[in-house]
Length: 331
Image (cartoon, rainbow, N blue to C red):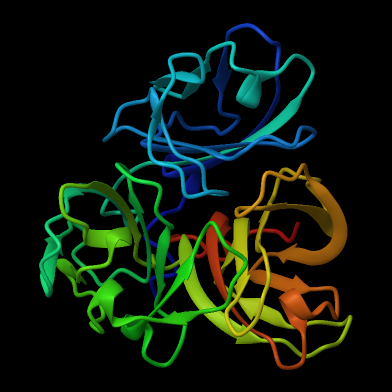
């Protein structure tokens, strides 16, 4: 039985916490393997600064903010390089204030790990297909208009029973919206995804960036669950010990909750950040990371309410059982 195709997730995904120095510095990942990131997401923990998104396709000096709709900005003082095993920072306080604490989540673009980055120019044409290189159907897609101040459009395989008809906004706490002008009421396929005429995904004379993920057994999973309204909350099986979990309620107002294995680094994991706000790190005991998934430890309606439906995006620290049949330990 094949348990995973990726024995060491650190080759494709890393979490790093660091302290700013107010000047310049290079940050090295903690993992046992070198990984040069293609997609870097940085957020202040102790400081109420925005989220910074950089990638190797647009160039490291270009950044976006998930908490707002701003167009792409250029700044040579934020992230200055994506290195062979980490990244370098300039003196911009948003990501490197002296004494401030920060977290970075980093992905390697790879079909093996189910992650693709695509840039394209919009043309406002209905029924337009955009090619991708995953070789499998994307289960999570995030698209941003780089030219104009337009919402982030999010597709998720388990958003609703007909996910091609709906979308979420990464910059918003709002519930799912039904809008055929985004994905043209069409689910993505193994080689293309569909966009229509919405300015969030295909406006005329605008440039776009798209981040696409497909699940890889033992490494990533994108699913949904319904809360039970109990402090002894839902268990969600992923098939791996998570390094990162993102949660979003789809049938009501809620933040985009971000948890990872480094903050605090033990159960109950009570440090959370919100993709849709610039808030500093919050401490609400809500989730356990387990050897084969995660478990909610709250009755809070936004992540485990009786009538709350949520989507999740999870990435592995270690597969539950590796390709040699060796299990991982609990946290």
